[in-house]
Image (tube, rainbow, N blue to C red; front, side, top):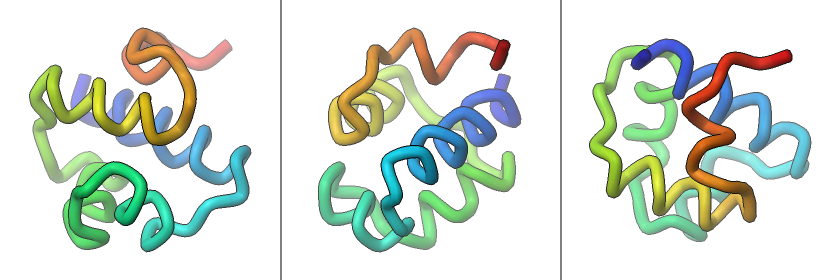
Length: 68
């Protein structure tokens, strides 16, 4: 699940043409945290997933489901 959330976060962030630094400013998490998350090194809480999803303007469920 950790890897899935990270991969989805990175994919959506890149689709939105945002850097990790820009996303960091939007969601209030550090760039280092986002880097670790995207590499599957962090285990985000549901609140963190929700905050990232809001910053990316997607549903939190989009970060939790396998890519099609």
